[in-house]
Every structure is written in structure tokens, then in C-alpha cells.
Length: 252
Ligand code: UDP
Image (cartoon, rainbow, N blue to C red; front, side, top):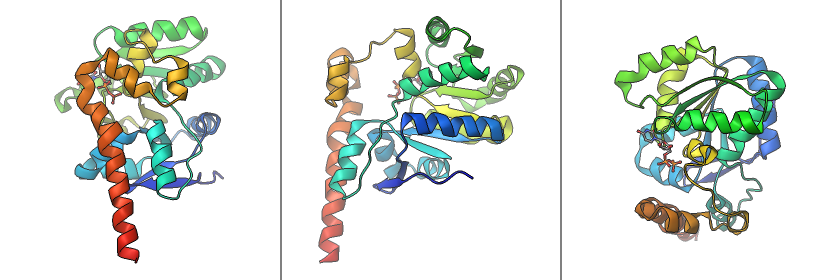
């Protein structure tokens, strides 16, 4: 039997406090069990989107595993008297799954990102994890009219682990809509991971990541994303603090 991991709740969104090793161990069990599962990699932007998008809120609540991605969540947990010990960045999870695939033969399908990027990410994974089984790569589109074609490709490839890079919230809404018919053991929304794996977008230097300054690196490299960075770095902490303030006031 699998025990439920410790959880924290931030602005109504549940996050499972699992380490990278625990996440991979759980994914191994999902593969062995064979039933369909959905894993979400929650970051502050997810939490903010969930405040105004009820369908996304439900999707996150129903996920089989909600791993913590983003240092902002750790701070938010601390400010609200909770403890979140772990971080599971999507791109590192993809690499661990490539390693798992090389060991076990689990078949990975890379769906999404700009044309050619999934293929380049797969080539990088093959170089780093010889023996990884890439079941298929396809950019496709998150549009509902393309779903039947995309599902057909994923099923024809006998996919066991599906990585979906359509950005948030589209990728997890796509999984929620399609997983009942796909019924593959593991489906994960992985955001910009293929861009990083392929080298199309560089990751922040390790020190910046350790200091929680990945957002600053992104702001300099991709200034057009300022609005999203603003949401994660300013709107999210403000919303968490206001929520805490309201709860304290109402308890007095
Ligand atoms: N993407 C896509 N189709 C879309 C929108 C986004 O394939 O209609 C891809 C985009 O190319 C990128 C990935 O989704 O590789 C993640 O996008 P973004 O960096 O905006 O998402 P985040 O990781 O920040 O949620």
C-alpha cells in the first residue's frame, strides 16, 4: 500500500511534499500498477491561475500527485505556518524519468513545444541516458480539434510515460480531458522542460537556482515574459500574505 505523502495547502491548492527520489519511486509504482495517473508540477503561477480558473482548480485537486516546483512555494508554506521540504523541478524530473526508462525500458513520449524541439530534447536525453526508450515525439497542438489525432499517435507508440509541454494551464487541462481515453500509466505536464533539455533556452546557473533567483535570470534572458514573472514573484507572495492576514484577523 502506498502512503499519502505529507501535504501543504497554499491558497487552496494542495501540494504533496515529496522529494525527487520519492517521486520517481511513486512513478515506478504507477507504471507497475498500470492504471492512468496524472502528475502536476505545481509552481506559484499554477496557484494564481487556480484562483480564477475553476476547471484548473479541479484538475489540480484530482491529480494523483502534485509535486512542488518553484522556491516561492517553500516561502509561502513557511509564511502560512507549514513546512515544505522538497523541490521537484520539471526538467530534472524529465531527466530522472529518462534514467528510469534506460533502466526499465519504460516508453516515453514527448508531446508539445515548438516543432523540432521535442526531437532535439529526445536526442539530448539519448546522449545523456543511453538506452532511454523514446516512444515518440510530436509538437501537435493543445487545441481540442487536434486531440483525436494526437491521442492516436500516443497510443500507437504504446506510450507508458507521457510528458506534455503545452505550458500552463493548457497542458494539464489537455491531460485531464484526454487521459480517460488514453489510459496510459503516467502523464505529466512539464512546461518549458523540452526547451531546456534541447538547449533552446539555457537554464539559470546553479548558484542562481540555489539562491532562488531563477526568475531574475529569466527576466534578463526573456524580458517578454515579465508579466508571468511578476505574477510569480510579486502577485503570488502578496496574495499569500493577504490571505494569511485575513485569516488572522477573522480568528481574533
Ligand atoms: N507550447 C506549445 N503550444 C502552445 C503553447 C506553449 O507547444 O500552444 C510550449 C512552448 O513551446 C514551451 C512549453 O509549451 O515549450 C511551455 O511554455 P511556457 O514556457 O510558456 O510554459 P511554462 O513552463 O512557463 O508554464
